[in-house]
Length: 620
Figure: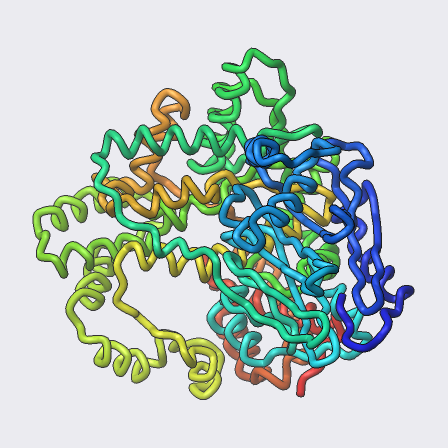
């Protein structure tokens, strides 16, 4: 915290630091210098000694607080030693601050890892802040003419401000109607912002002036002309390197295993790396399972277990625990969440904690980069149509129908083709006009045209984009919120979650590949499937079905209608300044027992209502 022309209330500031003790149960520290206060809670991963204590003072000039891991810190330390730097510890913390001393704000371009850090330069009277390229670790802040408050979680800022929490009405509407979260610098709390992934911030202590600049943009990565075999070889090399880096720790490491292609790839590659090293290491996987086979992937989880040396742990989340845990989860999330899959993820990390695991590897980021979502088909087909690659279009359409007809998320060929033709040939203005005339594509939802119009304000509907742009959109709209959930669920249980698919070198390699390396003969993630032949069991590598990380949410709602109706009614009362309660309840009653799979609207409203209650949110 930096307060212009004023002293820090140390008692409240230390309450702010301790409010998130679960993020760092191993150590705490504070630093004060007039109107500057820095606090830290440490979860020790590398060098468990006191040498990594923060706030970290360096050369009697810099003071740093830092959350995250720099995976290439050993390489960077060697480079700095060659420049004459000496080190008193084996921590990545000391390497990071030395990098800042050596390179200034350009240091972030050398880092491979996940981070949110702030460096106070006592000589220059500046505070330099940075968040990693994709926003894996959180950074929130409040900036007024008199104060700059930053923290890992929003609740800390609310405590430090000691004021009422007000809703950001526009962002709340986007969440309720569109399901969007975390895609801008704004949050659901008025005046509380987040530093976006790939951005830095510099604050001048004396004046309170603040500037934000972008240092990384995946979209600037150039296309590469590697042939398919070379692309597979590069993917395997970079993926293996990414997993190996994220296995580094002085504490136990485990894996989130859903049975899907992405998490299975991580577990199998990690097992291969450990086996090749000749070292013995206990490996544990945590999996969310269900008795209902329509939502369960134990068949594939068991296949991975048979092919590796892991010790599996399965959890079976029950709807009976949902509302018992809900307020606690929301408190940790800071904001409402879009589906009950986050509830299942909460229990995965809870189980990991019970197994004494401190680091977990997870598969976030693969679907967004490797065309793992069904929506990629329409975009890719449109791409072929616009370029009159009709033979390739016809071949891929044939394989799509043949391979995915039995998939749980199969979209009919008619709908895929229609979406592709609309996207490829209809002028943008006409598409926008028709979408508005048809209710923006949200016809039938229990919201007025005015509210829907406000929610989609500034959003381009059915925007024509290339597959590369579509992938970037997913990284912006869906990846950010998934990383938000990942961080809060893991840190709530004092666990660090690592995501190998978001190694920036791997991400840049994938982004540089042509689209037909990602969807090939109707198979998504083709380059990964072929690259990991011999690592992944064929049953996993060649599977077409895709569940995603799901819960039987619509089944829970339909089979417990009265319970969910009572929850929805209460939520509507909490949100009466935003939505029409009568319209929402009529819609829910009209759909009694018939809520469809993938319809997360009832849950979003219920969760938002609890959020208002948990944080005592007011509406202006």
